[in-house]
Length: 90
Image (spheres, rainbow, N blue to C red):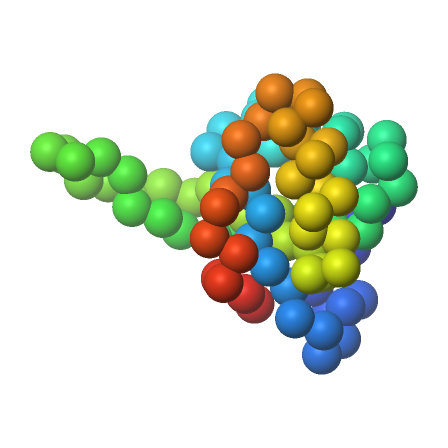
């Protein structure tokens, strides 16, 4: 279920996915909600492009370390590619 980051208190959260479009973010939420997985979504700016750089806002999905492997498995089953640098936290 989608939770506010405050819900997790002092727990470490790891970045599991970055959705660049609303449609993509809604599809990821549907995957996590169907499995009753607790996650947080934080809109965050990122830089895109190699030649013509631009700043955009994406939906950054976070889970607790205990749920990270389960979340990655769900995403891979549904055709999403999870974020691989699990060191990023909020």
